[in-house]
Length: 300
Image (tube, rainbow, N blue to C red; front, side, top):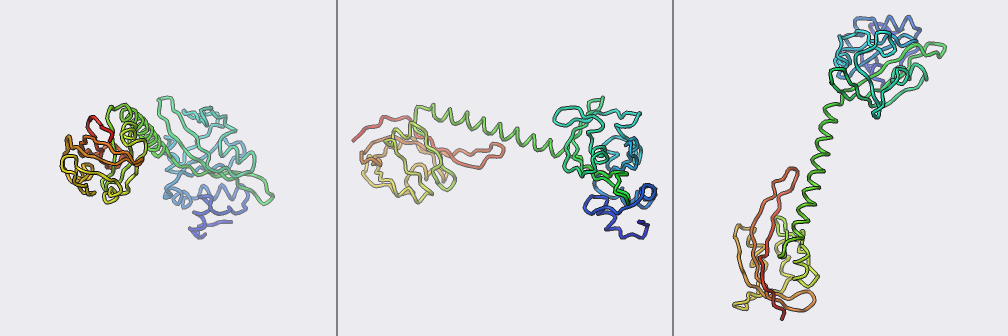
């Protein structure tokens, strides 16, 4: 029989379902669970512990953490199999559970270990909690199920944070879709880069202006790929001259007239503008938008 000198580490492992429990008769289990040291150990654990040594499952006792979940006093009896029905209902997948479907009752009835059984509890006053259970049967020397022990964890707050995150991601997706629709509806070409000048996005008008084909520069220096000249001087643009790149340094360009050679070999004259804009949306990455201004493009 387990006694008070039993290694605490082993006893905690048994309680937390990390180690197979010893084979004891029902009276030995009752003696263990009613032991003051055992209850003190259970109350020090950061998880809920529920214990049943009753074949009918009418009596289930709960440590301090589990009692807090269930809104009762530590080590009080609380069981849906009891005539004194608890004031909350238990649901799984939005369906109210019968007493025999609950974790400890299932382990008692089937002799099986139940893992990661997620349910939600709903009280008459509207309080709702989400709990995940693990339960394991306890056997006597003849292999008969004489009890069960369950661990429980209140994951209500975690689920709330996960739902908030999911809602935020959905809102970000909706905002991106709306922004994309606005970008495509603009009557001017638009180029979007990051802070290093990497070209991220080009709208349909910009594609048309560029002849239906755009080279996506990887950084500011990569704009040397493009063949462009200042219309008024004929001087060739260096990557640092591009309005897009100069705006990264805080400059604002309006009506810069540039001749450039499209990838299809045709040349075009176009007025350009560029300015810096910072995305501060929740969960967003800082990036910069460039706005080519309306222009009359002349094919050469």
